[in-house]
Amino acid sequence: MIPASVGVQCPECVREGRAAAPRVRGGGLRSAGRRWGPVTLVLIGVNVAMFVVTAISAAVAGINPFTNYLSPVFLDLEQWPPLVAAGQWWRLVTAAFLHVGPVHLLLNMLALLVFGTELEGRLGRWRYLAVYFVSVLGGATAVQLFSQSPVAGASTAIWGLMGSLGVLLLARRQDLRGIVTLLVLNVLISVLIPGISLVGHLGGLVGGALATGVLVLARRRAVQIAGVTTLAVVLVVLALAVPTIGVR
Image 1 (tube, rainbow, N blue to C red):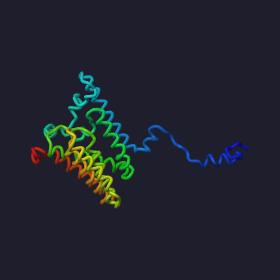
Image 2: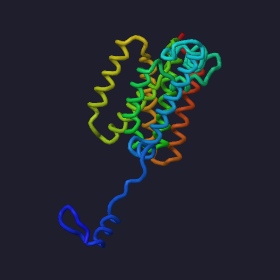
Image 3: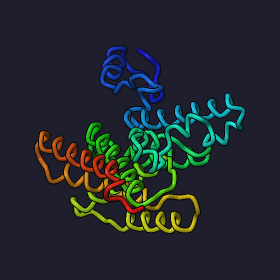
Image 4: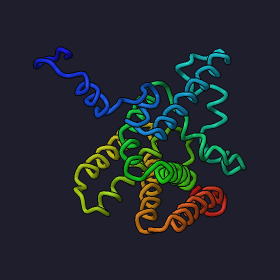
């Protein structure tokens, strides 16, 4: 017999109990991926890596690493509407992985962890990733059409995730008051604090909401892929057509 906290148990009972008990598999990155979502963690990793790259670039150029936004790499990748219109189209996407200082990075990554984990669980990995990048393009297109200022940050994608969550709540007839209140507060912050691109945020919000609307309305996967791809192409075309139809 084997001593136990409530008396003794036979060896056979102990073996059966151990066999029936759920096993905890692995740990570290694999455990974190199951808890937070692997795509969300990868996106956070890319953002952090780009911050490190721009900080190193600043240091090499003799600039304080914490003013990474002055580094050559940052200046080559941020979205500046005139340069995008001149043919540097990659800035539409690369700017969404840059951040102006560590505080900007920290705040955006915390928001991405919260909303990204929620959306990744609701939509699945690939649909979530599609919504993320359409949100990036939505914000970038809005900046191209209605702004002249250089911008950077994952905020456009995060606003798109909030728009996506709002559409999902609406489709399932769930309470929208929380997400609406959060959006109103963020609009006020964007208006009151200088240097924040409200235009980019609203563009990301619309992009994320539209992409999620396509996913909700289209039941078949092929139709979902076609719909989201078409939306992304339309946004890119609009962004690159700025010299013709943009507000200047």
